[in-house]
Length: 337
Ligand code: 13P
Image (cartoon, rainbow, N blue to C red; front, side):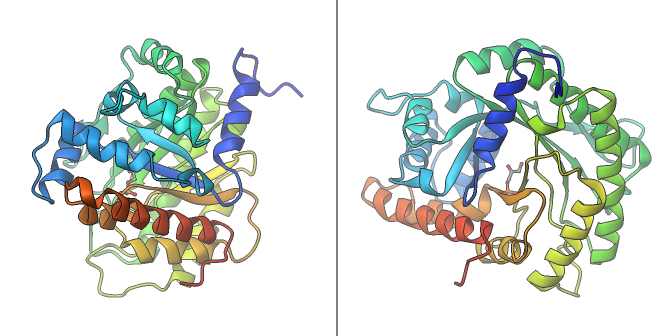
């Protein structure tokens, strides 16, 4: 069965399956320099290349991380970075059996003609950048665009988000990178869970429409959705069982089983919430690998524990491993706290 003519087809399927393997998920550590600066500022550190290097070295070299994490998303700087000892960060990941990935979008800018919404840049020159990232060892990519519920979302913003993701996905596959398709539906807002569900259904319908139009091979992509939850400022909170119920309903209605992996973002949930919600989704078998691609929900306590001090590296790595293990157990529905 030929699913897509193209020199990388078999490799894409293999990479996606490797990342979406039982008991494993993704560590997102692809904060842009600006976002990384905010994280470092929260522990009183300056946003220098040396501090970013020290922190990212700590993350990738946590002993045994590969038992729980199958992929790591890097920012461009880290893909080309070495540790203080001169070891390439990519090589450390490969030794840990963690597939290196790369954030390829160029961030959000205002979407003219919309209701104060944004769109994601980065298609210009994307093919040659993807080819260079592949040469450097990356095997998957990420493109994050956002949809805001309080601001609409307008039909224009949803269409632009979906089209951009589909163009990116096609270009990434052409260059050997498994695209992570991430239309983040932002948590901000007072809306209830039913409204999130409604918006998510529209967004994913458009995303898959344009993915198909662009001849993207579904067996060689990964998704990074937001879980279906009430808005962050909504008074009525939802239990993990409710979140799981709504989110799985969304996936069943919108995501073909050909897609190998659904790797959720944490989007501002607490570390524990993100684990409990994932665990609830894995209480019965799913057609896809339902897992995590967390940044904050893996790193928050780790970062605080480190605090920029070399003597805290081991304690910080232990905290990271605790979170990674908890989410690994949640991936197989066996997290018990
Ligand atoms: P959070 O898990 O912190 O939402 O980040 C995941 C991510 O990579 C968003 O693009």
